[in-house]
Length: 224
Length: 209
Image (cartoon, rainbow over all chains, first blue to last red; front, side, top):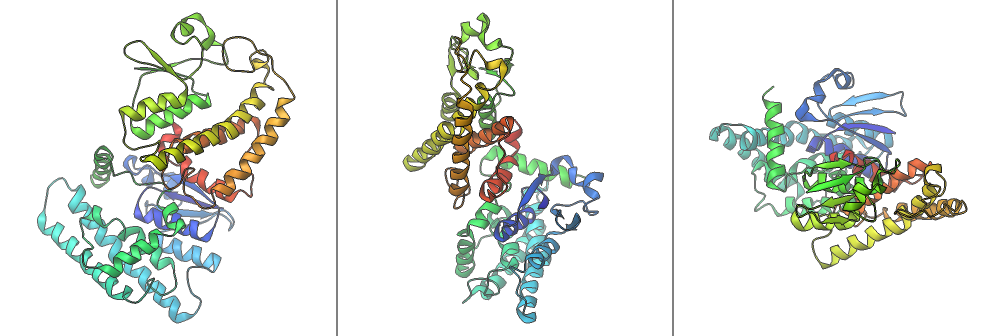
């Protein structure tokens, strides 16, 4: 059994999607980020960096793993799935995973901060991150031209990128004129495990009051 | 409005989770069912059937039956929809909801009310004494186990009980499954689909309402 420590965020969803895809039994442990639970000693013992997600593998001597990219690699290696064995293919999956970890995630995260959460509106920062996100989307568009998935065969690279890219509206970045990216988003959403993963737990931002609460929670985190 | 509630009663919990999902807050009055507080004259002047939960409206009238209370709240607060949003999904939610009640909740009520001493002379909810029948216990267990098998099979291809959207059917189901623990009927180890669904749904903040 895998104990997952998570919250309703794209990084958390990467792991719940992977656990659903891999058919691994898991337990969900939700942290209230607005209350700063991720910086309390109990969780810092699991992840010294105080960020979700983290896992504890109960079937491997309570081995703990933090950082969503590292967890995806761990789960893929544990099961021998979603990561090819052949060194070239394997490297390609890791490249597109790192593309998400160093590009899509941080840039969309910063776009969210400046577009949604920062109290003052500072347009140059909004532009900088939204433009960079759009550029990254265009890189994906090129890559997905003629491919169903980022590395042909469905992998942890698709999971990592999809968990973020699907939230492009929240970052205020359009996918207009990117038909291959759009088809890939739909192809991913057609997978039951992906739809299940993003409900574990769901992000509540559809209603205005829910979105306002979400922003309030994010602002409380930024204020620390 | 005022909600007559009982923290440990599964049907009362359904209404609390429903309210939490909608973000509705209503003042609550705790009524101790095991101690028979729902049968005293003060409560029966509000609700002659003596059942919990009961919602008292501002005009003094009362609505009982948890699903009826939820229906009333759904009409007042349509977002997010928890009872379907179009003809088909409304019917699907209703179908799954009834399945959870008839095939899940009722066998458990049979097991509990026909085996626990404090219900010996009130095996059927309500005001007049109806004696327990011990033989209904094994029948209830068999019936509930059949329900568990079906639930696990049904959850093979869906996210939630009634399909893609979380609904009142999930609320009823989670209350059924937690209620089953009272009579030592856990989700079987090999029921992977039910276990995964249970993890996802029970992680929602509303579930602890």
